[in-house]
Image 1 (cartoon, rainbow, N blue to C red):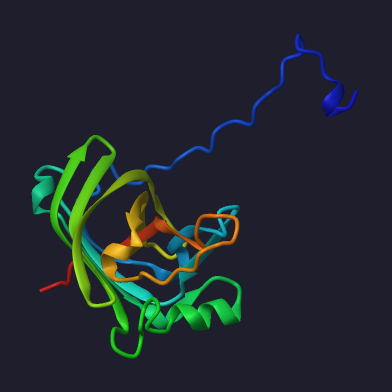
Image 2: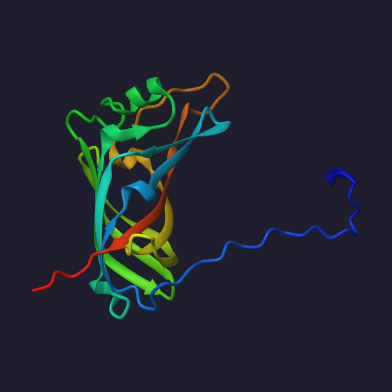
Length: 205
């Protein structure tokens, strides 16, 4: 029987949720972000009908995690704005101009935390986000996605988070009106973070 011929009385078995791994009970410590297994992305609505998605290929970051006193935790991330990619060379070139990131004058996007709060596996990280030379405070909610020991002996922790911002607050104000109403690019942009961080091994004195 085909999928579209099922009766309402027939149960559909859902795929089981992905299991998470736990390598450490307490993730407190110092970490560096692994760029090859981390995604810093974004999405914005285009022409009022669909979404354009992109990400940055070059970035680095560090974090100090204190589960007992979360306020002592900290995060710092630096992104190379020129590494933006959306799968379209012409669009990527436009994003690098003064209409958007203005990479000639503002080559880096940075985030530096100012406060961290924790509720179980949920974290709220507040910090200064600097884009295009403009700094604004934002709060990004994150969820722990697990920890693991990789084949190379590294302890890894994972986090997922996201936030929607108004890009015009960072002077990313380019737009064009549509004949049918609305604008070419939405002012609201969703930032998306899938982070894999590697624990730093304390140096031996």
